[in-house]
Image (cartoon, rainbow, N blue to C red; front, top):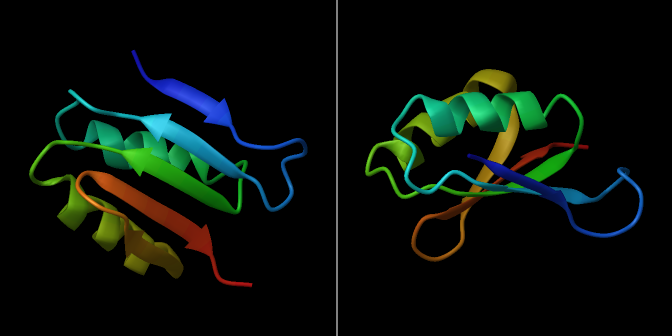
Length: 80
């Protein structure tokens, strides 16, 4: 089961955190795309070896920024 939680108070400028560890691709990318409908920034933890490639491609496709924070932690955000 995916853990979706919001860091902070309001949705504006707040990162949604997604725990997609244990999920095989394409599920982490699908969860990220869904969360980006509601937030301008997400942090996602995904340990599938393909997740980084899939999430980077998703970000490029939508014009979002993509960053890697340590092992298995990624950030996607809208460029504003």
